[in-house]
Length: 203
Image 1 (tube, rainbow, N blue to C red):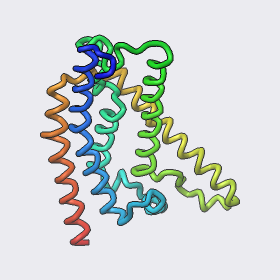
Image 2: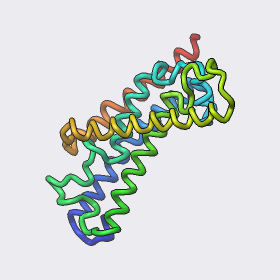
Image 3: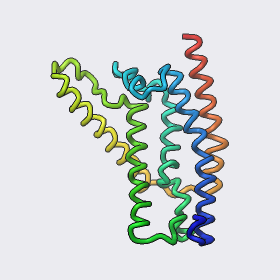
């Protein structure tokens, strides 16, 4: 936004930076509650913890909701695509970019959407584990292939959810996103950590 020497790009870059600090804190706090519930920072351990079919979305529903909302802000998808709000700022922080440079920006956003879907699937929906796959009596290679396919199906489902929300919901106003991040998501994420800690302590 600064490099293109355009006031609209600069304004948009400032909006992008303030959007990032609004949601990333809540996203990190949602993951902390998940780590407390699973007892490990390892993604492999988190996935294996969900092996019995009790996915983390059932254990941490509030954490999942917070993470999903912040993932929309992370990927700059509607209703949180404020850095490139065409109605207010022409085309966002990449106003001055065209051709392949703009293409790389947009390509990076879609890669980000894929990665976010993969992280959601891994953290909250059991990753590559399929329910009842052990009872089928398949070889280890077949189980691996089926598990990989199952993970990709979950990823594609969440990519569909990202697109579905973009088609459905109108864009938030700038101040609404800031209020949502600081006044709603962060307190809810802290409350989720306190509840998770209390449940771990008691049970």
